[in-house]
Image (cartoon, rainbow, N blue to C red; front, side):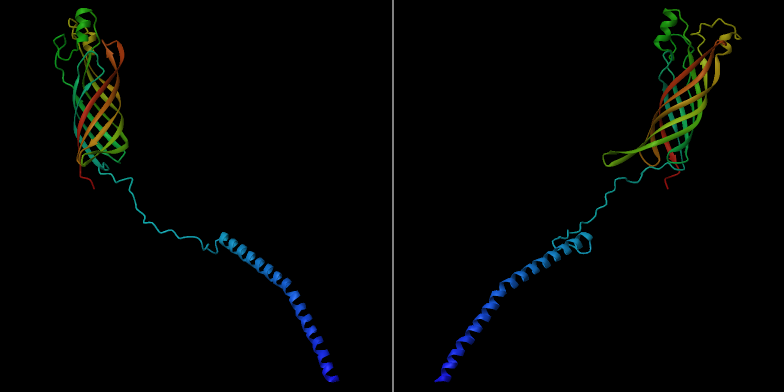
Length: 286
């Protein structure tokens, strides 16, 4: 009986100790769980921070970055090769023009042009021209304009009429501008150029206009009736190439020289010539 009673007394005590121990363990587990969660969050933040720094530094590419598809490159030619070349080629052709600024005379000019193109831009040019004398003066002279007849016949004024009869020059041509024009299915090349040079000009005074018809042959008007003058030449124009061998030119030239009138008076003359040329190029393009 005594032994049974002791065992019953010891059993509840042991059970109580186990319950106390369990409570003690359970009472400590919430704090451990909170610390574990906090530690995991700190590790996640550290890893995210480290990944951002790696992406910024270029060592690691972002996983969210989407690769764009590669596009095919297409080459567009904006500058096409020249279809008309002048380099180391000769240019020769006839010209037809007239003096545009002479108020007294009609002067028509037949000539020729010869160029050697040392480069695409620079050329050496030589010109020669002749202007025929169509009459010997007076109102019936086809060279005279109405103003000349009016001054001489109605106003009794002697205009200083000097005919340009011939000229020649050697100069430098500079063509810095080149372009193309579409004409239907064809491409026409052109360039714009300027010229500067030196030459000579032959002139003939109109004795009738000077009212020196009764003068002796050795008179002052007759002595300087025919002259040759050193001349400066400046001008410019455009060249249109219809093929590699044929081109059309339109140009304006200013020729300036000093003339002696009646053996005593010096006058500066300027002839503004407007002319067109048909040019032929040789040899062929390389």
